Image 1 (cartoon, helix red, strand yellow):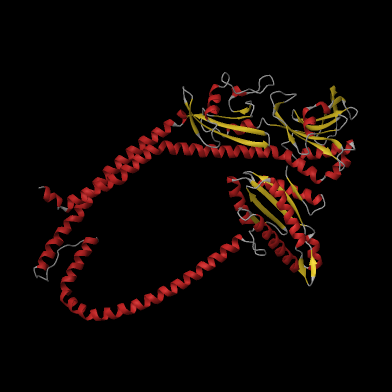
Image 2 (cartoon, rainbow, N blue to C red):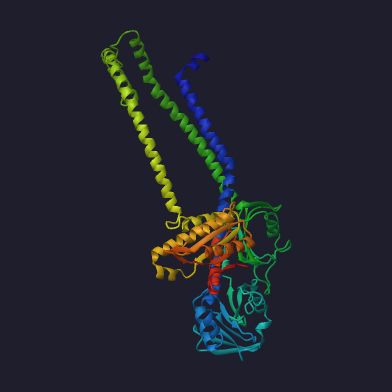
Length: 607
C-alpha cells in the first residue's frame, strides 16, 4: 500500500503542495514574527531622525537672521564707520535692519564710552533704549512705532555701562561674532533668550563699539511638541552644563528665572537615559530604567565652536507595544487562514487536472499497441482539452508525418549549417556594437562629471564627492579665484581667457599631483574663474605650504601668447570642513573675500 501511494500522482501533488507551502509560508511568518521588533525600532529611529532634522532646520531658521545681520555688516563696513558716528543715522540703520529680520527681537550698538542704543520688540510693541548722554549713565526707555518715530517716554532706568557687561567683554576677545549661553530674560524671566555680539573696529583696528542682537526661543516649545512620537513621549533641549533649555514636559519650565537642571533627584529618568545613551548620536537605544523600558535618541546642534545644543527624544516602549502585538496576532491568523485555503484549492485543482490525464493514459496505451486510429472522447476548453484535440490530430497524421520528417531531415541539416554561419556573423556584429556602446557610455560619463574646458571635476562632481567624503573624514576646503580675470578677458578676448583658464588648471593640477601623490585630493572648477580643492586628512601647515606653492607655481609659469608672457595670480580662501560642507564653503568664501580685500595673490585660512 505504501508503494501504491508512492507512485500515485495525486498523492505526490498533494505532498508537493503541502511541502511548498510549509517551505515558503512558515519561514516567512517566523522571520517576520521574530523581526517585527527590529523593524519597529528601525521605524522609530527613522522617525526620530526625521524629527531631529526638522528641529535642526528650525534652529537654523531661528539663528540665521542673526548671522545674516553680521554678514551684511561685513559688506557695508565702510558705510557703518560713518553711521556709528551719527546717532540719527545709527538709529535709522538699526530700525531698518530689525524690520527686515523677524526672528531678531533686539538690535543694538554699544559705543566705547559705555553708551547704548537699542531697538526691538517688547510686549507686542516696539521699545527704544538710549543712553541719556551717549555714554555710560542713565538709560532712557521709550515706546515707539515700527520705524522708531512717535516716541513716548516710559521710564529712566538706573546707571548703565555697556563695558561692564559680559557680552561686551567677550566680543573684544575676537573679531568673529560671539554667541552667548542661553539665559532667562532680564525683564520677563519666563522667556528664554540668546545673544550674538561682535566688536566693530575701523581699518586701523581702533574699537568703534560692539554690535549685538537678542533672540527669544520660546516658540521652540510648539516645534518640540509637533515632533513627539507618542502621547507619553517627550522632547527636550539641554546644554553641556546639564541645564534644560526647552522641553515638552511642563515640569521643566523656568523657575524664578533659573534654568532647570538635569539630576537624579529632579529628573531621574532623563539622567539615566543620558547616562546609558552616550555611546552614539542619532541612533535609537533601548534603555531599561528598572521600572520601565524607554526608547531614546540623542542628537546635537552646533551653534558655535564651544556652544552646543543637545536634543533628546524619549518615549516609553509600552506606547508602541499594543499596536505591535495586534499586528503580530493578525499576521499569524491571516497566514493560517491563507494556508488552509491554499490546501483546499490545491486539492480541487489536483482532481480537476488528474481525471482527464487518466483518459489520456488509456488512449496512449492503445496507440502503443498499434491502433493509430484511437480517439480520445474529451471535449474541454482548457489546456487538457487542447491536448486531447492535438492528440487526435496526431493519430490522423502520424503516418504522413513520419514520411515528411524523413524529407525534412536533409533540409534541416542545411538550415542548421546556414543558421550557425549567421549566428557567428551576428555575434561578431554584436561584440563590435557592444564595444562602441561601452566607449560612448564612458565618454558620456566623463562629460557629465568633468568640466568641458579644463577637463577637471565640474561643480556637480566636486560637490557630490565633497558631501560624501566630508561625512567620513575631515579636511580642508580651498576656494581659488583668478585675480583681475575680467581685465584679461577684456584685453585679450574670451578665447585667450579660456586658454588661460586651461593653463591655470594644468599648472595647479600638476602642483597637486607632485606634492600630494598619495592623497585623495580633489581639484574642480565650480564657476567661471572660480576653482576649489578638497584636501582630506591634511593639517593646516601643509595647507599653508601648498597654498604658497600654488601661488609661486603660477608666478613661475606664465601663459605664453604670441611670444608675450601673461602672468596669472590667484587669491585663496581656506576653511576646515567637518561634516558640514555648506558651512565650510561659506567660511572659505569669506576668507577668499578677505584675501581679495588684502590685495589679492595671497591665501587666508580660517582660524
